Image (tube, rainbow, N blue to C red; front, side):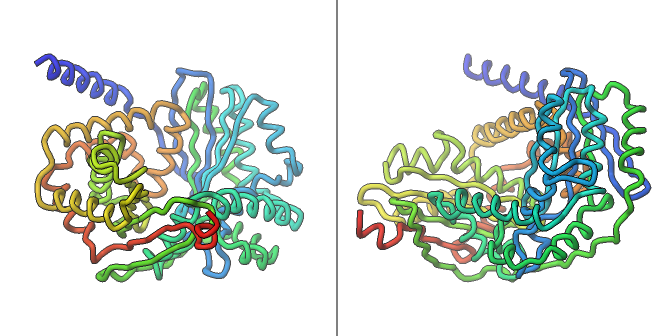
Length: 443
């Protein structure tokens, strides 16, 4: 009884926190098509100015991969009014921080300043959009930076090729088949005019959303600054995107990859899943958490703790705008093999497909996702990122407040149905990710 009361108390507190965290925002469009979203939060004297462009690795040509990620670096090189090498100096000297990141679907830039420097942040992002300097010096410099990043994150990192290898087999038609960092050979072969054309096509106001979040002292003044700095930027031609439809996976895919950076083998099971915008994708998130989120999860407790068959076990949903991938992985130990782990994993999946999970387990999942919802909206940086993503990728800004309702409405029956629909042996890749033979022989 005492445990029940404590659990009930925790749920009420969490629910109250989630409700209190409802994000208020205002949105409108400039004449050039730039979508603007404002979120006022005066709890701290900071403000974030961010721009998300609807361009990612999937918008590249097969022989020119890596452009979107390259631009994440290139557009810090400087503008007509910000000299080369001065961008970061301006930010830090005014008490700010900034960064950028790229996915298959979008590119995101942001600055966080003390709120009295809001105008500076808006000016800098408008400079990036209107006046970027894209010259050979910048391209050559960032080419070396990207090459070093690829060496660190992919080429010389243990298990760094896991996602690239999975993508290669999951997608044969869609641009998701290549990595965001792309091919160094493609970047080396590209001419300056190609980079300039890529910028002209995608980094335009009608392919972007501007977020101002935080301590907006004067909303009227903020709107005037936005119009002043962004309103005159020319609207670009509408971007026509090709639709890529993958054939269903109906036969098991078996593959092996040798990695010279590892000593322990890993087995990977991957399933192609629907767009992150779908309800099924949210149900798969629940399934991933149920199976492998934390040491109390089904797979970890069974395979690592109880049977001691693996050093590590895990699962995650790799969610994207057009398709997703559900990835399970495990590292066998002792006398156990990858086949042993797959057998144990499949047994748990069959249970999901056959039986309903307990009401208690379902409530635990809902509690975790409410907690994630609160955490995701606990900072202006998180709110700004969420506002931009929900507008640009999901087409509904208010999901920042309502998506949690979708998770809370997921039923045990849905979990069983979705597991049956997507997690079948004939619909997956089984990848043996093993040490390179020469390394294993020299061990």
